[in-house]
Length: 90
Image (cartoon, rainbow, N blue to C red; front, side, top):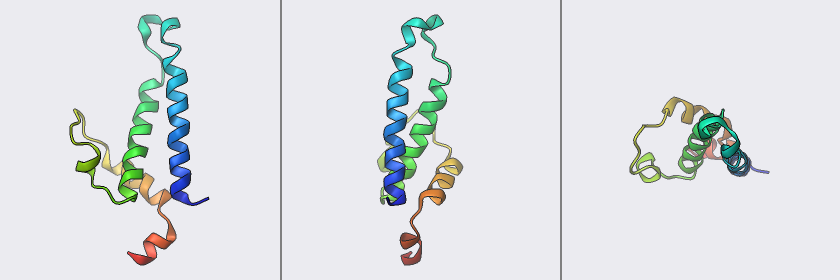
């Protein structure tokens, strides 16, 4: 499996975890689910890294966003999942 496919699979796993966590809102105090914000933050940054590895710019990915992404985190994810073939041709 290519590294980019692994990143996409991780995105799908984050989506499942977030849906499960959101379904427990009614049983939590004030509807606050612990660690949901952390899961969303990780999923967002993985999504940005995935799109940028596929050639999109940050402005294309998030045109309107209230809080800018942590680009150091995005770069770290990109370095981890960057294919050797892409690096050799660049």
